[in-house]
Amino acid sequence: MALRKLLFRVYALNSTPHSVKVLNTHMSAFSVLSPNSDLRVKHDRHNLCFSITMDGEGHQDSAVLRYKFTSKKEVDLLSTYVPESFRGKGVAALLSKAAMDFLVEENLKAHISCWYIKKYVEETPLLGYKDLIIF
Image (cartoon, rainbow, N blue to C red):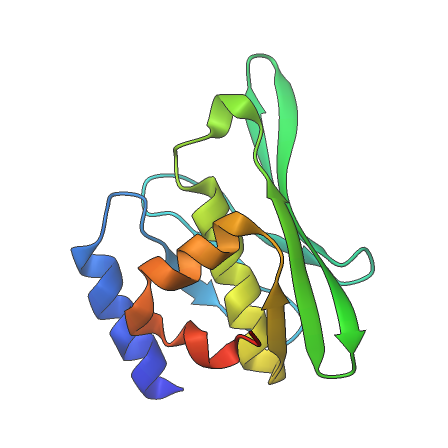
C-alpha cells in the first residue's frame, strides 16, 4: 500500500493540472481534492455512488459514479455522469480515483461497465489498478 501511495504521488506531480491528491482514505469515507479547486468526492454507501457537487450558472449540480455489488467481494462500476458544463475538467477522473481507492481499501475486485473508468484505469498504469479488474 505504501508503494502505491508513493507511485501515485510521483504520478500526480508529473501529470496534468487536473491530477488529484488523496487527502483521506479512511474505510468509511474518501476525500479527494483537486489541487486547483475544492471539489470533494463523497461516498454514499447506502446509495452505492460517489458524487461531487459543484456550483455553476446559479445552481448546484452533481457528478456521479454509480456501482453495484455483484457478490460480497466484487462490484460492477456501472457509470459516470458529469454535467456538460463541467466536462473536460478532470471531474470524472476524481470520481474514478475515489472508486478505485475504495476497491483497494475494501479488498474488492471489479467489473467495469463504464467506458470512462476503463479508460482511466488504462491511462494510469502506475497506480496498479489493473490488478483489481475482472475481465
